[in-house]
Length: 192
Length: 240
Image 1 (cartoon, rainbow over the protein chains, first blue to last red):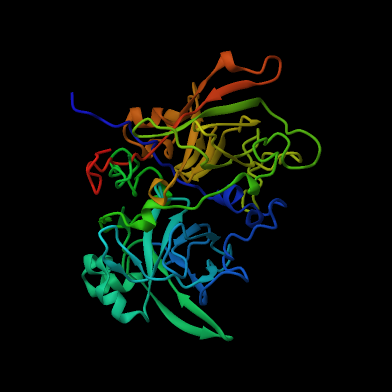
Image 2: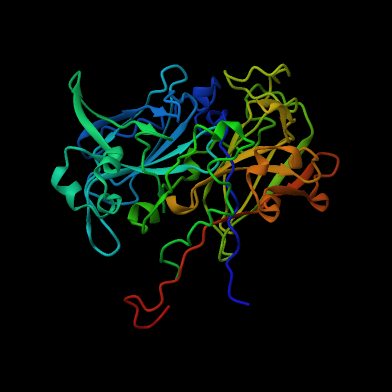
C-alpha cells in the first residue's frame, strides 16, 4: 500500500447565518460590539491608508447581501504574518469594505517579485467551499505586468477580474473590487 | 520538518461548487475551473489569535449570552482534537462556532422561523485549541429546522465551525452533525458531499464515558486540516 495522508475534514457552506459566529454584531447580537474586524489600520500602522470596497454578484447579476469576506495581506513592507480582516456584505446594499493600508510587494518562495495584492476569501449560503481570489491594484501597472500569478491568468479579460481601480473620494483613496461568482465577467478563483 | 507547501486539496472529497439538490448553489457556483497556483508566502502564513482576545465565557454557550441565566435545551459538551493530514496536532488555532437554539431558531435579524428565541441563548462561541490540538466547548444541542429549498427541506441538528489552522491555505468552515440523526441522510446540504466516508467525518460521536454525570452528555468531533509536505534536503545538507 502506498503512503496515504489522512483525509481532510470536508467543507460545508457557511450558510445564511454566518454572521452570528464571525461578526455577531452584524447579525444583531449585542456581543463583541467593540470588535471591528474590517477596520485594520490603527494610528500606529505603517503604510498608505486605503479603503477596499466592493459588491458580490451572483450568476443572475443580483447583489449578494449575505456573504462574509476575509482578507489576508502583507503589511506595508511586504511582510507576513501580515494583516487579517473580515467584513460582511451590507444586508441592504451588499457593499463590503475594509479600511486598511496598501500592502508592500512580496516575493514567492522561489524569490520572484510579486505585485502587491490582497487575498480575499468568500463564504456564504450556496457556496459549499469558500472561494479564494486575489485583488491586485490596477495602478501598479509595471509590477502587475511582471507578476507571476497575473501572468498565469494570462488572458486580459480574466486578469481584469482581479484588478481594483483606484479612485479618490472625500480625500480618501478607495479601491473598488467587485466579485462575480458566475457567468459574464466571472472572477478568477484559485485552487491554492 | 514540514515546511513545504500544503497537500493539494482533494476537490472530489469536498462538495462541488454546484449541487443540483441544494438550490442556493445554482447561481453562486463558478462555471470556470479553479486556477491552480503554487503556494506563496500569503498562503503559507496566516493570522495568529491569542488568548487575549477571548472572554472567559466564549466557550460556554449555555452562559455566554450574558443574561446571568442559562440557555434552555439538552446540555452537551463537544470536544475533540484538531490535527493535520499527517496526524500532527494543530495547536493554538482559533475555532469559532455558531448554531441555532434548542428549537432550531437562530438569533439573527434575518431568521424568521416560527420557533421562539431563547432569551438566554446567543448561539455564538469560540475557543483556541491547546498545545496538543485539543478543544472543548459547552452548549445546548441545536434543534432541526426547515428551510426553503425543494419545498420544505429540513436541516439536521448541526453546529457551524470555522478553523484557521496555521496558514491561510488550511482555512476551513464546515458544519458537524450528531450521530444517529435520521435527517442527515435526507439533508440536501449534508449530501452535497458525495462520499459517504467524507460525510461521516462530519458526524460527532456520542462519548458517553466522558459525560458530565448528572449534568451533560458529551460528543466527540475531531477535525483534520490540510497537511504540509516535507522538504527533504532543501538547503539542509544535514537532511531533516
